[in-house]
Length: 239
Image 1: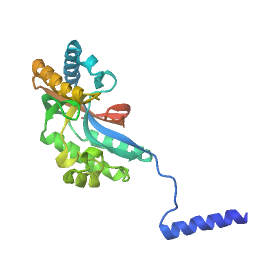
Image 2 (image 1 turned 90 degrees about the vertical axis):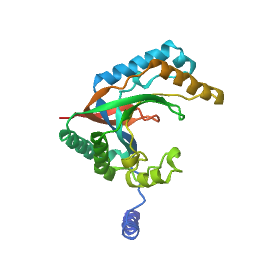
Image 3 (image 1 turned 60 degrees about the horizontal axis):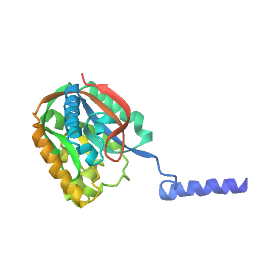
Image 4 (image 1 turned 90 degrees about the horizontal axis):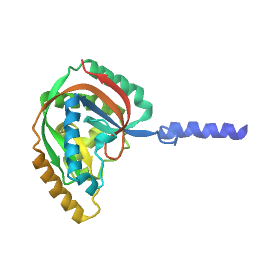
């Protein structure tokens, strides 16, 4: 009994002196808050993927398009959150969705980036930028503040500054909407060079035509290392 009392006194003293006891860190997960588009975007990406398959590029580079295992989405805000905050996050996202009307977004072009991602880019508009800003400003208070900035953004002062405020290096002025199509891991430098050559040629021959799609819902869920949704936690239609 004496040991128990002394232990409690030590814990109480630690809290009084240091502000809190040395407790285990809270569990956190990467969560992506995103928009769900109307089905025409899925159909277009599917057509492009089919074209890549016919050309043998999916097999050559041993890659599987995201659409096969993950939902098409346009990320508004991606960061790490303590799982204990999920109920508050859900409530906030529902409230935002209840007060935002469906709106159009126009796609622009398909790009094979040097970072080995293939993406369908969109033309930014006021509605999209405003909604991303709103989601970030309302949800950043719940983020995991111990989350580390991604390696690719560490040497960019502007992105570092935004990350320190939001937990994301792609928020506010650095936000740029897109739909991810696939990601590659070239086996060597030769394959990496061939990837850009082969995919740029395939993109050119595909002759993608910009189109308008409607944003119909806000959703959120856990993601993998490629930023793809592995588990949807909630989806709320725009009004």
